[in-house]
Image (cartoon, rainbow, N blue to C red; front, side):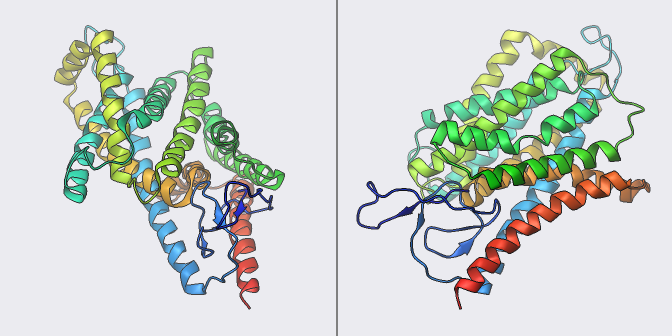
Length: 376
């Protein structure tokens, strides 16, 4: 990620210096070694980082990585179970499919806002009065986050696995482009190349590891939903990082971000349910299929925990790192499936995995060695 060196006495007139930085590791504003914190300007200080500081940052990253994986591996499984399983038919849903993607989004937002209200009240002493960032600042990413979730749910019926994989694994470069559009962030060509290699590796691994016997056929409406999902998702993470930068990372914690985003999103999803006439259909479906309600509860719980890890990761390490973590989630999901069910890995799948992790380890090691060497 491009870093800007600014003078401590005249930051407005200093010029950015382009550097060929690895994607995953950057220097923080205090000159210490760490994982990237979005697009904050780093100091020109040349103070060296110790190995302990590097390992401490690595442990924080590992915590966020593990939390995101556990939350969203479970959430993804339950999401697909709800939207693709044929349940007991009802008069309003004769095909047995769950009738409302909007309700899935609503249930996620409802539990998330409850958790956020309690957390902010306990930590800040008030729900809204002590927030530095106004609620209106969260409205754009709340809208994009709602639309992204809805598009992803809606696409599951119309898109085959290979197409889903290509779209989901290609978000890194769109996130970088969105950062350029929203915040004027510049990325060197080397980072675009690294992002492309990660995208290619994940796509090859996922497609080569998946049997296509039961794949859903791809329809044009499904491609439209996936395009909407990628665009809205890229906008969301970059706008959230913009809020952290504008109002100060120390002034907006993950719970406040969670509260701000979901306060606006819950109004949007509730309005959609009422205007779309989905509520009677959902109640009818739950009466006939009570297990679907349980699935929605599990999805809401994992979505809430996942949101906390999302906001923490974006605050601490930036939207690019967050996108890389979520992109590699597909590979981890397939690896777990292979271990549990005894599926064999193809040579193509192993090549894709080696490509992804090779790029990631190269990025981390290159930056660490550069800082470690400079401290001598």
